[in-house]
Image (cartoon, rainbow, N blue to C red; front, side, top):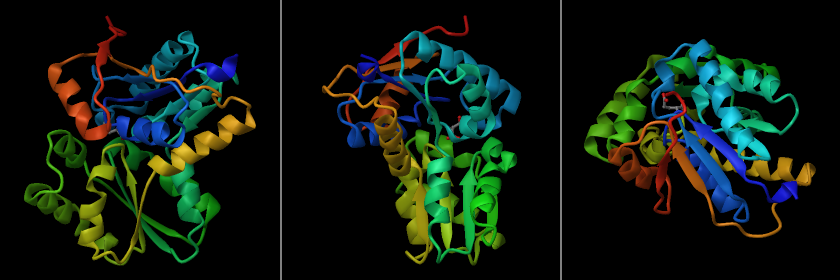
Length: 268
Ligand code: DGL
């Protein structure tokens, strides 16, 4: 039965494991096939065309492994390649991104009239969050900033310490952010610095990340399409396009259980 098939999740690397983790927590019966394109990391500095090209190839990899749904866990790829992947799979499986669920969440917060967004250069340059939010809430002012250092900083283990707080503070002192009422953490890695962003604003503003919203959205889509798994599966698989021990070590930051990364040479 198709409902017992796995869910495909992909990201530029291992940061998307934060999203996979939320999916595992909300949908404990589901089996996951994760693909991290570590050979091309970071996507944040790549052209939209390059990210679209990678995303199609990865979507094919997930479809070949019978995935019943594809989640683009990477914000940069969600911004650059969501439509491309949707067109490519041509209705065969539902495709989710990490942008729409959080935008809907923010739009529903009627007390928010000015919102800040931080993410990679690619995500911010696309202005997709701005456009999607404006479409739902034309009264909301959107201000955004590319915070290029943050993903690599977190991946190197710098979060919840004085170094990360100094860098975060430096970015958040951006004048346009001085009177925001909400902040969207538009990157796979940023849930790990949510507390630090919150303390920069003295808990005055609402901070949004996509993880929980995406997992809830996925549950709704699986229910609507009769694709919810009815038996518990514990055989998640995690593939990367380039393997190093350091990547495997770093997964501990993003995923709550210990995992083993399998190398899949997609680009050789
Ligand atoms: N996964 C990317 C994102 O969410 C961050 C890392 C990268 O630039 O590849 O935008």
